Image 1 (cartoon, helix red, strand yellow):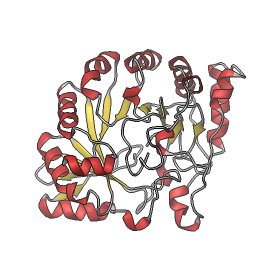
Image 2 (tube, rainbow, N blue to C red):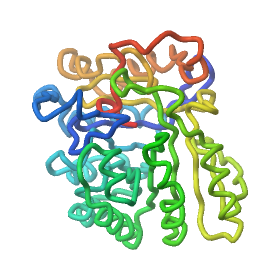
Image 3 (tube, helix red, strand yellow):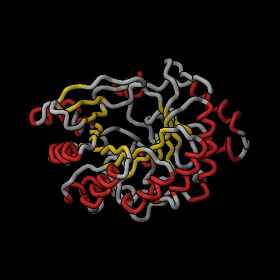
Length: 337
């Protein structure tokens, strides 16, 4: 196993793998309905990495020292037999921290199979408890109580569970306290994620961002919080504990307090491009390395290592000095959040 760092001495520790670009919601900040309506053509099946190819990629990243793999989308539970992929990855990396991010709409029906296959953690995206507010954010109607029930059941089954919430000004600010209170009572860690300018299609404007400090102040007035020390490897979230020790809460502050300095993640799109930053304008043709060059695990690891070693990305820290987002920048539904 190698220790690999980029041009800013940031180690490669975390891999996010999108297994589909399809989704059953049309969230404002990711896949807005007005641009990606019923007739929109997602990637054809033959362009998407197979489970065997994904497993080969993860095996190469294991040679480079990663310890975490997160399965994302699109919505990963739309892909058939996703528990087979989890089982395959668990066999390849018995000690991997193996996670999935999902919108939770299909989670209830998959929980048992995912647990049996070896999934450790779940992050469930839910931007409101109120159904009307949730529909406005998600672009489609959804049964928020069914999603919540699946979250609670997952926790009881032994998954490590977090709830992810994006707050957009004047849309779902009213849900900050209901979500905080419900998660606090259930002992589920809630993560507020600042509305970000991922891709070029979500119409992002800085005046629609509700900053983490604004959310923190609101919650702190009702339920006093104290900061938790950042552990080894840091992570992207600033975490807090309730003063009465009834749970934890986190904030991902990509806009107001960028964390580029500690970013140790690589991303693979559903169609097989390697990205070294969520905001990168383009990726590297990993699928071509697999299908046309037929690289084995060691050769693939060497190629990936060269890409990471040349990495200089610090987009969030430089956001204010950059021009408008490039039209070629991948969308969140293509490379996962």
